[in-house]
Length: 317
Image (cartoon, rainbow, N blue to C red; front, side, top):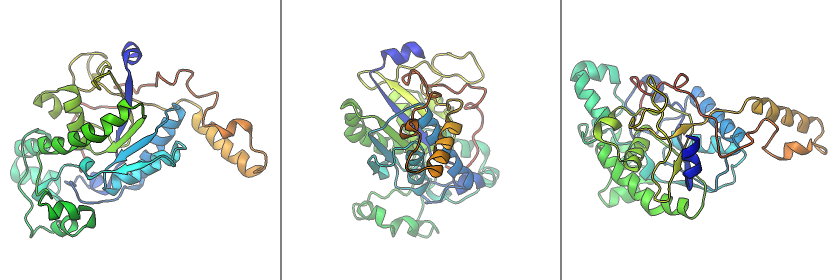
């Protein structure tokens, strides 16, 4: 990974939103605009503190128009002291539309429809769940939402999506807006969803269908993607459960971990500030402490023992 980082010309930090209410209930979420749970809010705060401890700076952030993404994004930026940067909310980063499955319990659906059918709906690249019709309880939640007025008027509001369908809109946004920003030298944060991130990473890495089926992304954990001049990943893949650098597993990002001592330092600064507002400690004007990394280009990476990315994934999406 160190060699890969040294050869990278760019990098992008990405993360999935914090745990949502439907994640907790193990329900198909799709475009239903559910809030974060308390645990999800804490995940977002922790992610921001991790980014701050790594001294990672951003020029612009992208998130979806769904609140679990946008609230996570704003919480992360506030926690890392960068709440002032522009945040671009884009519907193209929304979670995939789960059609008539939205709002259904996954375990119960697997019992009635079969495990393999539900696995194909969730993990497959080209499989679309059944369409949502206008009698579905969730239909007016989107059809009458002003966020999607243009999509409704143009006849583009999805009724269901495969991961391949999701990839079309995600890659349109990447190619038209995000990639040019990265190539111009801007440091970019992307806070999106399980499937919009899977769609993006599949296309950046050129994965096959079986690889993308096995890709699982945890909620609320930021990861850095070193990229070459063509914006292709250059890092060595992480391979949970196998040898650390097994090639071809299909995930070349590096999960970031907090630097030891940073949080206590930052909290002490806030205490000092409240004790004597006129004379805060000089080091408290900076997010950097003696505990921050001496080489910001070499972030700490969470091991596969901390994050199991290869097992069955629970929660809504």
